[in-house]
Amino acid sequence: MKVGRRPGPKPKHLYVRVVRAGSEDDVDFPTPGIVRPFLEHLEHVGRLVAHGALRTPTGDLLIFRATDLAEARRVLRTDPFAGIHRTSYEFLEWSPAERGSGVNLDPPPPRGSGRLTSLQRVAVVVRDQKRAIAWYQNILGLAIRSQDPDTGYVELALGLGTSAISLIAPHADWGEPYYSEALDRIGAATGIVFQTDSVRALELRLRNAHATVTQSVREEPWGGSTIRFADPDGNEFLAFETLFPRSRTAVPARRRS
Image (cartoon, rainbow, N blue to C red; front, top):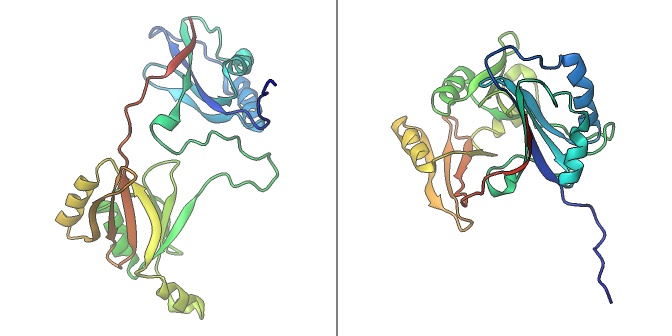
């Protein structure tokens, strides 16, 4: 008896399409009005992962989902960046599972289904907001992303497109039970986890700044290392370093110029 393929969704793969200008001469790249419908269609069908312009050399980068190489080629049939004079056109099959994190291979739910599209911010309650801002900037390297002096609202993040930490200082004029509930959150484990390129260097930096290290570097059974530390109000965070296996280079899928 022949065993057929088990039913279920096909695995999703990521493909990277790169267009580079072949010289310093001006290249007639498509206008945003031409590119936008192509990207909107990819987003609508759950294929679009990322898109943006290249600076050096001038060009364009697209990351999208497809079930296999043949489907990826069909997706690019309507690519407005294909066939541009004095450019190189290349697309690669990418395997992000071997190294790195944060890329979701599964397509998002359909639009209008109440899907969550991003994690925007998390709140950390502090006693002295001005002191906390300085600590998060100088010790952790976060930058102010949004601030409103009139309301005391402030967000700090590691960069554009990343989740932010909102530092909240309770005020008695909030009334009860909100004021007391906010005070009770100060000095607890936040559950917030950072990733670092070196937990040992991070520990050295924290100790040199006289920050509180609640757990020194610890080797974990899953192969990485972790450290726990706290801000001046005792709010605790965890940072980890992952030891990645050696990864293979991307597999060229097609090239033309």
